[in-house]
Figure (cartoon, rainbow, N blue to C red):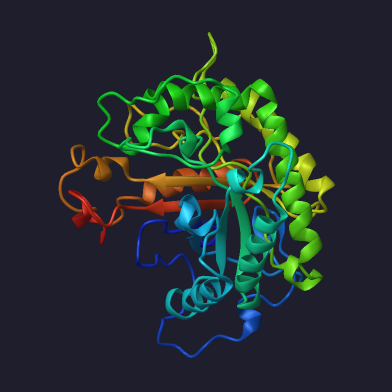
Length: 379
């Protein structure tokens, strides 16, 4: 059980604190030798765990960087500058003990004009990745999306998204966005017709948008590979193809499980082929199941977890999120979290990864720091 527990990367998206997974040093301890962080050797997936060139198990733990990618002010980049990225990388190691980051990228900024990759954006993103690699922090990029695209939303909407470029939204002629009685941002995924239809079109390659995404992803990976030194590229752990996938709309007779099998998994196989073509053959794809597969509210939970994908490792890693929707709701859980409350939830993740013979990555785990339920955050 301790070995299984040590295989989790826990990324705190919205928390200021740090969750210890295994072997985290106190912030007051003397700095660890660089070899205990990133010694220049690439990681591989073997026997359901990450291992270095010496066959030692490596525990990945860290943070998402950064939500600033979703804002226009930084031009789709996680940080305002390379200097800002370097300060953050240093602080991440010194204050939080993190050794890995999930580095957010934006399709909208990578391909602002259809068929034209913005190499200025890719250069800036690569430079910011290098800031973390220079600090001994491993990196895995993530082509991030939330509610498909900000261009689906009205300027005065309560909500917004990020991800797809404007041209991809314009091609769909989607209805005006409206979520009805939505108390939470995430309800747009299943209640906002514009988001639902745009997501459906992406998965079914309407207007060729999925092909365009895959081509841009390949060019992005090739650029990163070509513009990092071999030593720096060794610190790139893999690539997260798509954040929090959901069907949007299921076809008649389709279930969440068959959607994963017949739509989502073929997409990951295509992405895997693009990784290989871009020179990322030795690095795994960090694939996410249907985002509601492990929801802890029964009415939100959908069957999934890549149940029909078979053995994933060593070319794939089981990559999932966990948010306590009961606590976040402010309705379904009163008071603070109890000791051991999440043991079962994380056990589910470990068991699913073990069944696929690959490591488990929990790449988002967090809680609001403001609002009516923020008092639950410390627990």
